[in-house]
Image (cartoon, rainbow over all chains, first blue to last red; front, top):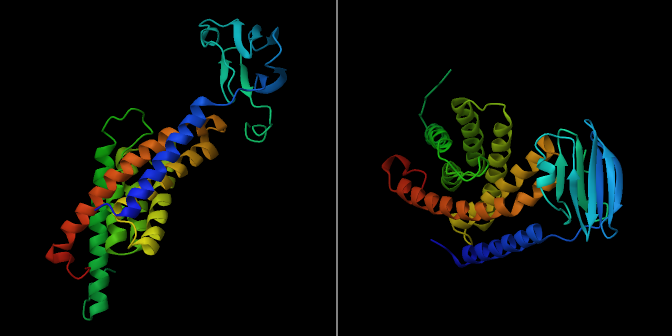
Length: 119
Length: 184
């Protein structure tokens, strides 16, 4: 039932899948954090510079910290604090969001290839 | 309207083909419907067992037969389940058509090289790729969903192999049936 070409194809696709899996889950370290409030981009911060800053959202002010190449919500004026418990993000494509406050932070590779597709 | 004049051989063949395709569409729709009730790890991961009937149509007839079975199966199946024109309908439609096209073309050109298992694996990958692209284009405009691609592809490999084996068995069985003898 399985021809030699079948086995070759399956082996090739299996390797490709494993490879793509390690690409997606491993991920590159992001370069910058992009902040969106109310669906609009309000700023970017470099991940290698430690900082703490405030972002005005729909409900109030969310405080975001960047420490050792990782960003996280310190506090947010929402009820569930899902964003705060979400922990740190830093790899390219990762994101954390405080949906009630409409604040989204996203780690990006800094190569700009995400800019064309987000909206 | 429905003229079943079967005076010469080509008419007979056409009637036979349409009857067989109707049977395959009915079977595929039934499988599609039953499959909707089978729980999977995530709602968008499905076995695509109905694709066995698409492979069978391609193997017994041609590219167009497979496309017809895939298209009508998604139409009828979604009407039965009640997902017609919902997001999952469009996702399923894109996947069904993409896999039918890829399987039909690859069957025509690589018939001797790949068995139905290889053809089916190619179809499963085409289906999953088309579904992710559809989700991206129509519903979630975030490139993060491409992070799910490895999951889709890994699952597609498994379901592709299973469906290919199923198709191989079904075709072998069908070719032994007197009603399908003219096809062989």
